Image (tube, rainbow, N blue to C red; front, side):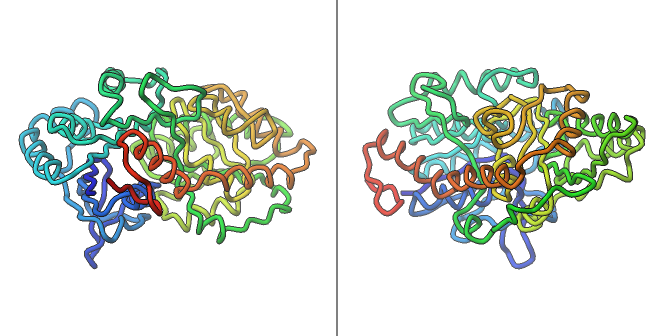
Length: 389
């Protein structure tokens, strides 16, 4: 069984020939690849960057031309190179038994349609918010409509989340994660560690508008101007198009000395930084089942986040594994940061609950759950973690 993965994920080749990428993508591709005999990865080739992890060593990596620009300019770039993209995708789709596409994304959507046109088995994952939010686009709606229309039989459709029932007929909820079983064994946080002064707050993720980081910096500004407010220091882990704007915002708020922009970091550096943190704040405006929340909890770090994207399912009742604040409410976020810094609490028990929750959500468990759905729907056997006809 050969799987062909078509993704818009940006990847680069190191001097030794290995391909790398950022975030949880490399680990998730290793997990998906473990279900099959062979894997081909069609990804966007970009210049060499820092803070990445290697793609699966046994996978055949095929670079797609990188679309240029953002938003409308990017869409026009994809259209200009449409014939080249489709030709390359078709060639590898025809060699595959299964086509896997992580959506949403322009090139992944083309791969989805190419696989469907050539009647290959589809394994489709929608990683954004399945429910419509203020950040949803027309293309998001079209993508979800196509998934609903093609769900069932040969086509396995997964929506990232943890809701009850099904998101739509023939579509299954599926959590997402970047936590490995090896990390569960290797990462042993000091669950008895007291909160630091100033409170060490971390953000992990892209620096882009939908992540709501500007509201976090606004909250720091509110605390900075509030008489008697506890000190808070923020570390931003990640890169993105909004970095320069956020740096300017920190300057305008007078909190430049309290905000550290670390940029894109590798997995090891990310976890080490989280191990030093007291709180992880993820003020997203739109989200699915956020991997960074689990990364923080693996390190025994409670999370402040918004209710979007199954925030409540991950956090539990306020104080269970963290706290929820409404999106775009910097004032309430500032209040929560101040409360976490000074209110009496059994912080070691809080850290322990976070850690135990994250231990249940590994990429190995994720692959096993996906494999079970595929084996049932495709009427195959799942033997030692591999799909067999």
